[in-house]
Image (cartoon, rainbow, N blue to C red; front, side, top):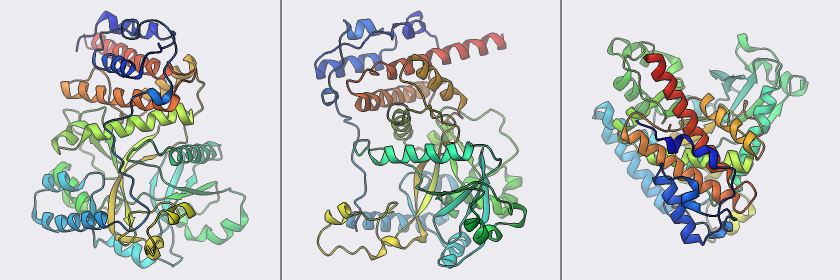
Length: 461
């Protein structure tokens, strides 16, 4: 894709204040800037005045409130029943059809898998912890029969403590932003046990596998359950080389399947012969082939990034976005927080809440999750902070869409991401002194990507 000289110089115009205009004119100016990349900021916004107040910024017309009520919902029960019946009908369908229907946000699935049976049987027992994965700073273990997991530090550095504190900051801010109707789930973070906490380690050390029976700092957080079996086997049938499929289905590690969402990358022409479902990479071309709503996924990621940048004020370094599941709680939507007084007061009289504390591992719902905050760092609300955020954007795996993509679809997806990121950022910042920073971030990302592409072309030549 050719890149104009106007685009190359766009980032130089961002030290000015944004103009104060009426809300309709401001919205029109934003639309013009988003949809016309050759148009510079001075032409769009005119004189340098102040932003309108936050309430004057056009609300997000594309958003619809999808927050489930904290009580028994007939519509949820009906949707769940439909999805469960659909899963039964899909049993004889080809893998791609199954993935189109089931590998998506909110799909509810009934499973009689060994995982579900094992989890259900372990409820209220003191089962041994099971190793299920590794992160950059810790080793992950499930606590069978619960929705808890443990992350045990690999070293004695402060990385796990940073993970814990950043995770809590992100979680608290997402909880306090009801106006952000994102589908992103952040796992609950429960507690931290230090390596010197003798009371906890004396009681729990022997529950770890023998090769992991050593004391180190530990976080307990909400476990993201793996993608259900019908989806896992469909992924293997659709994407694993035929000669490896039998072994892939028999490999116990492939039961711990989370799906990473790579909206910023297409598959390589020559796929790797190595295949694993642990942290399975689902690229943008695969999502398109499965007819997934990639615009919705991009908008959700944009919301999350805007919140981290301008509300939590961190660089979002190495944060990951995955598809995973959660158990339903009887007929009640997944209640990921304890019932509070305000929840109870909002319910109709005589609402039954008895099932809100019972996990049902045989009925699971697929969600989009944001995880891993150990490398996140604070950013300053100035040009230096923006540059740090841009660096982290490109250091991360290609979850986010990229500007100047290979296809017109890639370019449209970047426009969707950019639009949502700026709208959510303006909603969060309002008329504060940081009002120009989100546009500065987007312009610097585009400029950095342009330079990266030029270097690649020069190297190829």
